Amino acid sequence: MKYGILLLSVFLSYCSAEHPRVVDDHDSELVKITVDVEKTDTLRMSEYFSNITYHHLKTPNNEPIGRIFKILIQDNHVALYDRSKKSVWIFTKSGEYVNEVKIPQGRGVGELENISDVYFDNENRIHALGSFELLMLDMEGNLIEEISLDFFGYRFTYYENTGNYFAYSGTFNTRIPDQFQGYDLYKFNMRGQVIGSYIPQVENKLGLDFGVPNSFPVYRGVYYYFQHLNDTVYYIGENDLKPAYVFEFGDQALPEEIFERRKKYGTEFWQWSDFWENEIDPYDYITHKTNFEVTDRYIHSRLGSAESNYMILYDREKKTTHIGKDKFVNDIDYGPSPYIYLSSDESLYSYVEANDMLRHLNELYNNDREKYFSREVEQLRRIADSMRENSNPILMRLDFNE
Image 1 (spheres, rainbow, N blue to C red):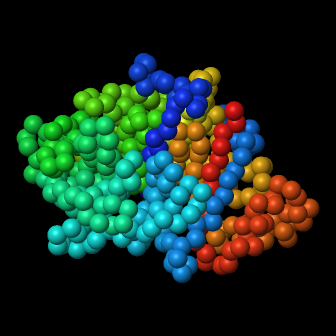
Image 2: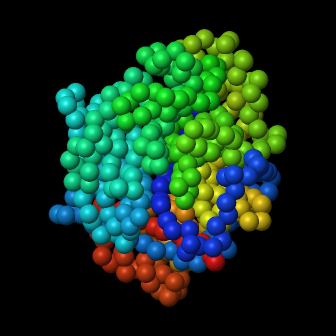
Image 3: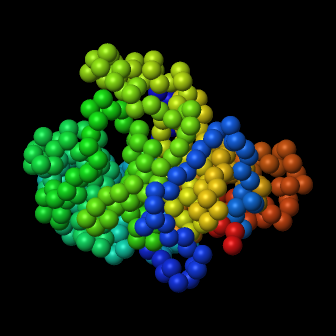
């Protein structure tokens, strides 16, 4: 099972009056997104985007930012979860440094073990999930709340309208009340009490997890949830959960009955790997979604099988699907074209490591001198002049065409 863990997240509150072209379909019938990989084509940035903006992220004393696992956006702030340092770096949307919040680690009061996920809310508070504990911190790193949990959560979101949380588990949790046992998604309150559960667990899928940074995209205050080995994306209401979107993969759809064969392989982890390699990989089924982002005009997603990865742009107005080969081709400024990792309501976001940017521009200089010195590359040349090797990454925003 050869998967790359990609970054993805979405969280932004925005005034919809500024964007009259918003498509509201979460209250409509189930939206079907048909994906025919035979129609895969090259997707060029200029066909969809009007502009790319870059911000080189600078920190006090050039303190290095580690591996960014999750990016979250709220109002004028961008929060980067640095999983290697267990820190949340906070910048303004224009790239100005605000603070580094280090999540306390340990077994004491106000500390977490095995940090699995973070959330940045619209009051600029950081929620951090660990083993049977959840912390709420302010932007200065001060402890606001510590919540004890009766279950282990893997990914979570904070439902800001109610102050409740939703957490994905993906495993058995024997300490929660019986009426909530056997489900993948739990709702719990600020006291840590489970008050709802959704999506029954399928025993033969337990343990076959695929780690994505964000399973809970948000679009204009509407919360969604998607999970591994499930082609449906759910709308999360205050008191319910219902299907919102479903991917249709045709012959490459993963048959549900195939998981009955898992019983033949035993219960040990390596036996589950054998099941996957023997029963799924050889048939090139679409097996995983690494992200799902809703914007005003498009839904962006990345899907993959054992052999191929695909980028999906679903036009919410025209109800059409564009399927790309892995990444966009950057024909706007000829810069790098990294994977798309998150979205706001109207844009897509990514980031580029400094060394990757410098390497890309060096190759462009050596291979196409005329293009390197063109007007389109001017912004990138200016950024590169202010960088050195092993500098901190560059935040990248792609604005859709009007």
